[in-house]
Structures are given as structure tokens and as C-alpha cells.
Length: 237
Ligand SMILES: Cc1cc2nc3c(=O)[nH]c(=O)nc-3n(C[C@H](O)[C@H](O)[C@H](O)COP(=O)(O)O)c2cc1C
Picture 1 (cartoon, rainbow, N blue to C red):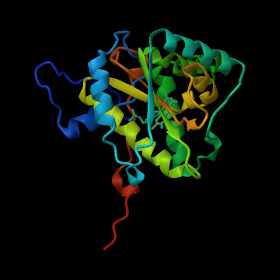
Picture 2 (cartoon, protein in one colour):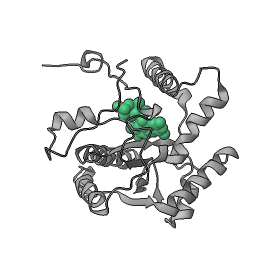
Picture 3 (spheres, protein in one colour):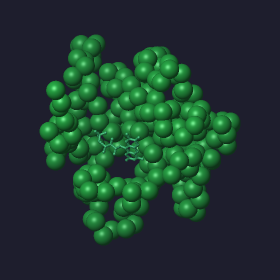
Picture 4 (cartoon, rainbow, N blue to C red):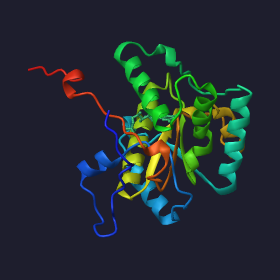
């Protein structure tokens, strides 16, 4: 496991990062500064994100950006619903489904995360507090939710939303910003729709909290590695 502080590209002197730098600087940020992102920068990220490819160019994303008092309202609702264990997800998600090396990687993430936050494995309350940070958006001033229309079994549109999400995240990095995709927010899709007045036919996979990274936040003190391509790629000829 690579361990390093959250690297933030210095965009003051050079306005562009190479593609390789954007990929390598992008990380899931778990500690943001309160500083809001200027509107025109958010628009610029959205202009980038919409360039994502999609099945039949359907562009199946209906994005809501939430900030200020509405974001506070969402946070309070998430914490309330989570405490009451009242979940309203659009799609099931059972961590118990992970097996073999996928399960191991999930375990490695949990270990790195709780170590980063300085919480012992058997400290249930501490783990709960860390997990609840999801519902405070890790202090981020903004949240993007790419809602999706529902088609068939939703696998293809889910893939499209994934492409959109990654394009959004890479654009954040290229703008000197940071973000984190959060499936945990999707556990309360029903509540989010109610608060944001979103019609029931639009479904939610994940939200993306975003803003300026706080490089000193404990949640940014660890970095997840990747397995070598030899473990995931098969060549044929
Ligand atoms: C669709 C999606 C949903 C995720 N949901 C969460 C989440 O709810 N909470 C969280 O802390 N991290 C979440 N993550 C972040 C992953 O843990 C992270 O991408 C992974 O550990 C690799 O680390 P990196 O993004 O820093 O490279 C999510 C990532 C993806 C792609």
C-alpha cells in the first residue's frame, strides 16, 4: 500500500496537466475545505463530463448539483435515516457478494481507511463515525448526483453513468479540485428524490461530493494502490 499525503497539482503557474498526471493525481478525497467552488468552474466540469461516451449516444444523465442550505438539509436527512436504518435504495448492494480477490481488495480498503482515520478495528463506534462522514460529504461544499432514466435491467445505463462519473472526476482533478463517488448516498435515493423534487422514474447509483481537497485531513492520509495488469489482463493473438 502506497502511503502519501494528498497531492494537489499546482495549477497557478501551468494551466494544464498531462492526461497521465490527471489520472495519477485523481484520488477519492475524504476531507474537503469549506471553500466553495466558483460557479463557472462547476460549469466547466459539467461541460467536460457531458463528453462521456454512452450507449447509442443516449447521454442518460440528469445531473443535480446541490450546495448551501439544500446540502445541509440532505445531510441531516441522511444521518436521520441512517440512524433509523430506513434505507430507500434504487439498486441492491450487498458487500457479502464480493468473493476471492475482490473481497480481499475491499478488506484492504477498509483497513487502510480505518488506519488512516486512526480507528482501531474493534472500535465499532469509531468505525461508525468514520462511515457517517459519508453523510456529511466529508465536509465538501458541493454534491453532484447524476440521476439516470431507467431502461430494461439498467446494466447499460449504469455503465453510461459510470463513464460520466469518471469523466466528471477526472475533470475535477484537471481543474485543481477533488471528489469522491459515493454509493453510500444511493442508499437513500428515495429521500434524496423527495428533497430535491426529482421524479420517481429517475434512478440513482451514486453521488459525487466535490470541492477543494484538505491535504491535512486524516481521510486523505492514505492512498489505494492497484494490482499489476498481469493480474487483470489476458492477451490473445
Ligand atoms: C461507484 C463508486 C462508489 C463509491 N462509493 C464510496 C462510498 O460510498 N464511500 C467511500 O468512502 N468511498 C467510495 N468509493 C471510493 C472507492 O473506495 C475508491 O474509488 C477506491 O477505494 C479506490 O481509491 P481511489 O479512488 O482513491 O483510487 C466509491 C467508488 C466508486 C467508483
